[in-house]
Length: 471
Image 1 (cartoon, helix red, strand yellow):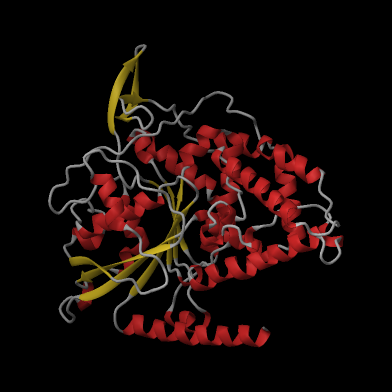
Image 2: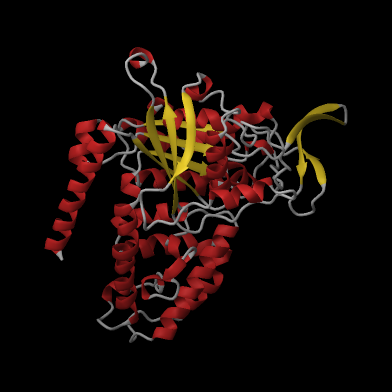
């Protein structure tokens, strides 16, 4: 196994070097990873990004588009034949239908290639004709990204972390009761193992629904074709380290290691390690609405997410010898259209504070990072209303649950992010002086003019940060 692993690594290094030379000398390729935790808007982000690259009328802050240097953009077959294609046309259809609705969430990895015909600028403008730049967009669930942290943890270490986290969580009450009746040293009984895994999965699903972000292993929530396999039929149980062979505890530890070897490592090797640029979408408003513990949990998740990256600079020689590194990482607070634009600076400041630890580590390694509030598809309009003699900056949209139009004021975000992060770090049960609300809006009906993609907030600015230097 060691020899085959070394051989596989050598082959992949040679293939990577060949691809690097081809991309550098001929048609550059940018692999953009798009991820985020549940309900952060990954599918909508990619759909709107592609639509606005194909029709660039709403992209003034993408400099190559504003300068007229992008002469054409078109979809091409993706380079990875074994990765499902991102269903761009179907998702755009749901958003532009007469009665639009949000597309289904990301449940597996997918990919799409957008090719741009770009005229160079600067000194090369008169010496070189248009060149083709390929943008490969890789969509994958954020839950899978958090799994990469498991590679550095043994089964006992992971178990200790999980059991400490769930000790006081009501969502884990049923699993804790089942765990108390479990003997790790008893002989393996497959129905018992399946019952433990099912109960632990129910906890993970409930925890995610209630605003927790530390829900690993991620494939328990999005199993795909692994459903029912031994690789995801395990759970954290006490005293497994001392369990004899063929016991329940020994088998749980073995399956955990198999999960890392056969699920997590291939994802890192085949997809994640090849990414050049990365956007991490965050539903920060949802976390604020769920309270201080959700905000602190989100802050920890952002730090864990960045620990999975190898940030740095992709100089040609370093790429050739060491493999790719993520050069730019954007942490984006999605659903900015749920706030009046007057509060967007506060949301951006909160996002910067939430990701401070993560961004500092990335910057130290040589990567460029940024935080931003954006909406990939604008679903609301803004208006100012009188309320008891005061002016309230509101947003108006169609409520997802009732289908009715409503104006909404979510509350005033603090100008100092420490007013949120302080109580969050102290594990306060609720905000002391404010109640932050959130509404779920349906997408607004769209009438798109020729040459214009869907309306958005700062999607062009985000695109400029992520790939503008390559255009």
